[in-house]
Image (tube, rainbow, N blue to C red; front, side, top):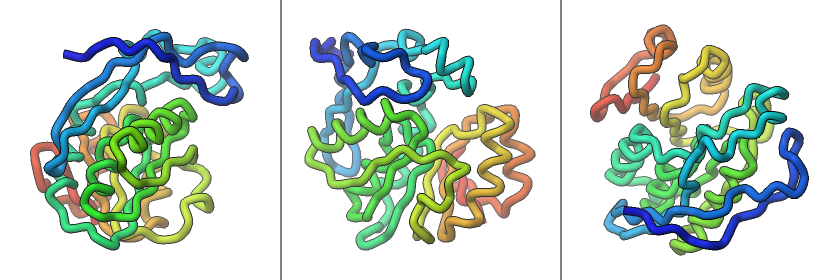
Length: 210
């Protein structure tokens, strides 16, 4: 069970967010074990409460990042079993960023990215409150130049929920280098996407792509 926390998290205004709007009135604290550590992760109690009609009208933006999705948890546990000391690890569409947290706990140099500034702000706060060193920044998938070269490992959890995401990732991922681990629960666009790669299933619905 989570517990309600009273302090809202505020982030800088972005296009599509009405000025003066608080990100949320309360956060839920989740406790979980990952890579031999007990962590406390703050998250919004309801993603629906964060829906911004202006942002949706502008880019069909919905706050998927605010959910603790099973795919993110599954990928995080796979990553927690890897030897990553000294590796450069990138997570795309990080949301709450559990795979990034796991990689950092395993000694990687981690950059967690999302296109929602709220997600990045909360990810940074969660990393700090758990004493975890990682970088997090807002990056869109059509900005590969902001992803700073090639990576040893690229992570993604439940990214294929829209056709435009699958198309963008088919263009982006080959530019990033390294191994790709993707957790995919069976979204409609996943079959065609996965058919473009050599795929190994390393855990239930977690795939290594080549």
